[in-house]
Structures are given as C-alpha cells and as structure tokens.
Length: 202
Image (cartoon, rainbow, N blue to C red):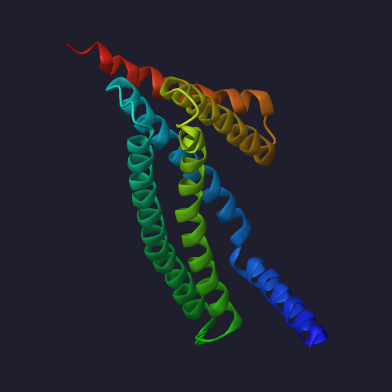
C-alpha cells in the first residue's frame, strides 16, 4: 500500500513538472504572488490607517473589518484570475490548434493549460489574503496589548513584509536587493503618510 502511494506521488510530481514546462506556470505564480501579495499589504495598510485615524479603539472591530476586506480580496482574486486565465489559456489552445491543424482537447497540453488556470486563480486569490492577514496578528492579542501598540506593530509588520517582497523581486530580476526592498518600503510609507493626511481635513 505504501509503495502504491509513493508511486502515485511520484507520478503526480512528474505530471506537475510536465504541466509546468508546457504552460510555464512557475513564472506566472511568482508574478501573481508578488503583485497580489503587495496589493494585500497595501490594502491592509490603508484599512489600518483609516481605523487609526478615526480612533477605532476596539481590537475586535479592527479584526472584523480586516477579515471582511480579506474575504473581498480573496473572492475577487480567485474569480477574476480564473476567468482571465481561462480565457487566455483557451485562446492559447485555440492558436495552437490553428497552427498545428489538430484538435488538442483532452491532450496533455489541454490538461496543462487547465491546471495552470486553476493554480493561478488560487495563488492570485490566496496571496493577498495571507499577506493582508499577517499584519493584524497583534490585534488578536488585544486583550493584553494597548490598541495603539497593536496599530504600531501592525504598521511595522506591514513595512517589513513590503521590504521582504522587494528583496524577493530584486532576487528574481537580479537587481540590487536593498534598493528593490527600499522601493517597496517607500510605497508602504507613502500609503500610510497619505492616509494620515486625511486626519488634517477639517
């Protein structure tokens, strides 16, 4: 039984490798993860800054608001990416059929493109949710921490994550890691600063 499971695992692994070669899935997933992870953090920074400005002092309200935003990000990401990727992959399949004059339905190419659409949709939807949820972890300890400390920790975590995404992108593009990280960090600081300007509106 164990040997059968092991063989199925290797078969599945080889199948995924073939799908990746055919549909170039890895590069798309890296792009989705970085871009949508960035969107998730920036969105949460805006939510936190807004709550901070209007002086939301109940940590439960911050958590509920943040989860509502995360649900929206996840649903939008999964649905949008799935339909977009499906349309693009179907067009790619149609173009291949036109150039080869063969019906490619239910071939390995067909399954590879379908798999790419589904995986891309999941990563597109889950990456902003995960990155948006991490900064609000301090609020789960709201019983033991002051609300202001929760906000400061959340802002700090968000900025550190943005710097990390910048390093990740710098490594992929073979650019200067620190410079790439600082560019992402600057975006987060700008988001918070512009949000805090709203507090000056009479």
